[in-house]
Image (cartoon, rainbow, N blue to C red):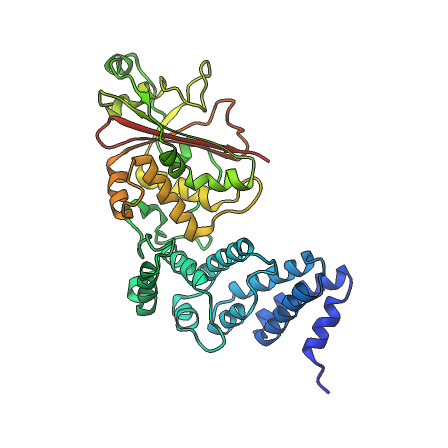
Length: 391
């Protein structure tokens, strides 16, 4: 007589820690064997226990994570349908659900083919209805994966619906912009290639050597006398990519704007930068080493910062990370808050960019440091964003 799989799952969940560990291994085996019905039953039982039995949900959450990861990394419509039948999170409350859906969207975009995603998620096959928030995040994750989203009518129409509904992600285009060229997967590329930058030296992040200030540069820029004009709303926009450092961890952020009656030459920017009254480099501190950077590298740095987890807490994941990176860029170049991203992108390409070495005592210098400067179009305005975090 065939045993009841649900009863067997309940018995395993009622066991000790070793039983939980064994169940984690069984998840891998069952999913690799395409036993997606069992996976769906396990997800339902995990949700039932978390909702009704008041148990310590840490072990249940561990198992749900293993189950989601296994299904998200197993390509095919059947595994994707099983994944969408699972709860996104066992924790109650909108923040936990939103974070879980953003994470799931990122995993699905990297683990499944668009040809499978489109009919299952956006075609809403019977029994696999996904939330609009999940679909909105997944749409942007697909863009970041380099998928030609406009070529899929269901994806294109969903993107248009987001604009009609004024969804927070609606301003993001359904294709990568020229400033996002560093996000395009090269050909050929290793299997584990990613556009996310690892912790590295400033020189590696900027891709260019240090600008050394010469006496001639100081002489040419002597008439330049920048005054701080920081606007709180602009500073908040500039800080968007590091907001989670502040809200979830021990982060510090300084976003500053300066204006000069005399335009600053990009060639002399380093000489002006060393005289700015910067929060991150108090008077008496050795001035930062400055490296010129391309616009696409600055976006890559900001996007990596947004999607990475701070010392404590979670990253923003791809969709909202992209939104935060563009908001930071908009603040740095002085774009209007309601400016289309296409307009912001034009200003970003016209600006001159620099990445500074986070060398002062203000920075924790652990693994979460950021220092970006922009000489805005026209040369009279300078914006500097610095941030640091620690465990």
